Length: 314
Image (tube, rainbow, N blue to C red; front, side, top):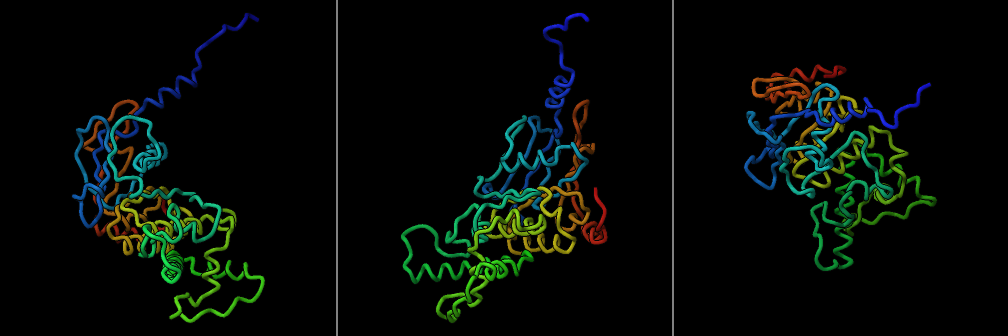
């Protein structure tokens, strides 16, 4: 056999380089602004390509759809600040004002309280209490903790995990619990549920994916971001649970703008605009290696029709 050359072109490597150069999204000028006000600069996010010559659109609750490979998750991760590769510009609030919910949520090692408040800290004022400054007195500290306990237990009820804290509080009790103090003494009367907030468990191992996604929505409601980025954040939930999560997001955080990626047509009911990737429109041009997009408003009729769309996907 003749000797192989010391080097020869790698066809697969060349193909990978061509794919990296391909621009999945072009001519996109999109502003994501809170429902209450679209003019507040600290509460707006804009994603744009390097040559902005398309029509501009504004949305406060945006659904991103498209076939696999059209750049849905890439766009969301770039908007969330998780990816920096590629060309173009993204203007968004500070990372402290945004929150990203992936399909597989991150459950930190620790307590249920810490998981709900992450990336914040217990006692940091999530329930509306004071944060920072001088150390509170014992009386003030007890009142803050009681308020935080009630706030977190109510959040768990909202995201359909109402019995979780009580379940683990009872499991962690090797002896009968002490009698609870009266409510006027600044303590929550449901002692098993309160104890359950501080039980350390590997939550990523004991909770199903659907329960983890509901816990992530509780974390979102606790941190109150100005912009939320949801990447298949309800994929493991049934239709009723999905509806409860989005309704809680809209009612409890009315000033929060959010953008979602998902394949269920039922998601249309919770958004006001739809960005279809891989679809050419009059405002976009396409060429070899590039994809178009279309930004479409979602009408009330479309939201109503989405109620009967369970079981179908885009």
